[in-house]
Image: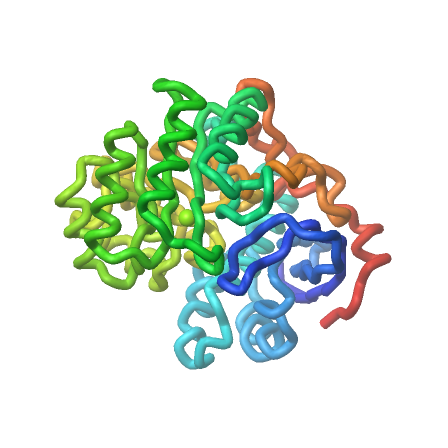
Length: 384
Ligand code: MG
């Protein structure tokens, strides 16, 4: 098998979410949004697909790095190809991102699964055919009846429990919300949700990312009293000492790192150094499925859970193949957004949730994405 073609198709679809000036997602009026599909094809007619942002898979990145490493190589040599790309990152002057690596690696996994007629989670070494989801809310906003008050969070939590979720994670208010961040309001929202769902439901908080140590400590104490299950990213993750200090001073488990660069190297320092109680990885954060598996297994070796950041087919495949993770992150959810409605470029979503609050692992070959190729063809803007 030899890789013959790497192709990126950029297309548009109608999105009903927008990003604010700090990058947080909220409901918005329907508008055109760009998406990219990377397709890797070999000389035996096998192909694999993955989605990514058009800017991370732009022509410069594909021509100068991805094609140079992949073309003519065996698509099954994922570790060799991934390392080839990862070592290009330094010389690329930040042009070749972890997200680009992830999309390329996901497409290689999809190709392997398609060629072997096996779901990727089984190729990785299957552990379970379903995983419980937690409902992960969008960040707070200032929309009436949206997520603008603690009471809004409480009402939405009730709706999520009725929908079948067995656990909930809040993202609270972050700038540019006029009065955010606020430790007091964060605790009020967490209390309203605990009150709404009762004592037995696991709850988690993903706090503002830039609190000080004392603010993070005060917030952590507050949600510890409310019996929250984990405390995520209250401070800038680049300060490892701050997280070690927080983990030492609070009883509630500290989860991380999520956005810190450095892939498994950074996570190894957190896991071995007592910086977190629960490790964090996600395929788009660390460059793909392979590095996520390394992190999950490293955490497992330290009797530590590794919770997976974000949803999607790649993260679901990892969850199907590891035992030390409790939940699939389903979202981001908001009272004004119908998460179960597939975007136009998919025939169905990969993470449909049943009434038990479980996501079933796909049984179709590859990553299990149900792609609407006719739609993508009709909405193509460019190809490279
Ligand atoms: Mg997070």
